[in-house]
Length: 264
Image 1 (cartoon, helix red, strand yellow):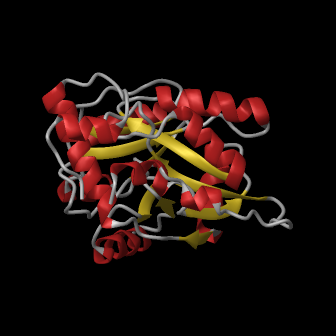
Image 2 (spheres, helix red, strand yellow):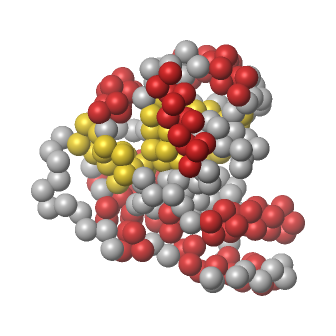
């Protein structure tokens, strides 16, 4: 499979929006990464273009940065000012990753999960624990920390398309049910081919509280990501470490060739 496959957008190109969409609802992919995450190759224009084509609203939550969400929502709200400004960030706490959504300011990584939740709450934002039981990721939240903060977390990601083991997604769903938390659905997209593949259809919302209350009644559309996206991301991160790439520049296939890597 050529590296250029990761730039393909088959789900976007072939997406047929319902002519009679369910009134008062929105399709929401609650975990998307832009090039402001150092392991993603999806530029801002592609994310906005996906939304325009499919109507699937992206929650852009880059690693330790709100810049991607600022830029995406600036463009989206230029087209539709009624869409709320949702600044989000996937924060690497000392205990693993937590997403803050509806933030006012960026939150620094490296502090405890409890301190991170304090800041999220102080900003009037909501917290999401992404891929809580995924053993594939070293950055997933520590189980001990998760149990400590379970009562304080607002949302548990119960459907993460990049979690390779379906049992681990199910564990997130069960954990959410145990603590009475709503679940979110996320593509966790890092490549364009993953866009427009996963979302939850919920009632339209404008505030964190409205989003929180809409999730339990949502309809889940979930499609696990192909194994190739994991392999590509691992290679891309390795290239950035070894080549000192400050940002996404040039063609990924060329970068792979220059690094002496043959992508299958």
